[in-house]
Length: 101
Image (cartoon, rainbow, N blue to C red; front, side):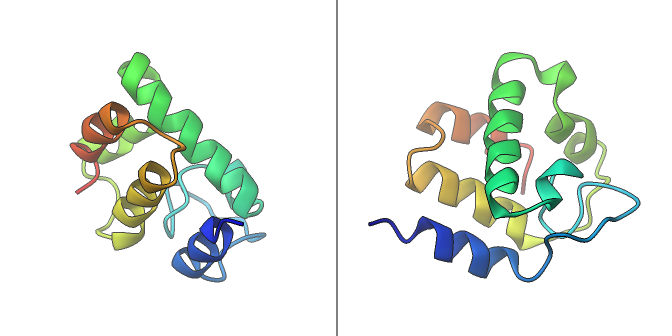
């Protein structure tokens, strides 16, 4: 089987199940993504394809373009993990990586 889950969880840390006032936060893009690791992955995949297809509606574009997110290596690492495990295409990765430094 895949070790994706363990890598994602290790990368994320103990961040799920806690509500925060603002998102993105601690490598989580949306409030719903903070529910658990599965929803975090689902929100990441949805947001990356949203940015690829309709960037004006993407949380990633809204937050990262304005520099709202404090530097946190988890964002770039999660994006790469999604590409490496085939959740997103290389093309989508290249476009989204421009926003997440």
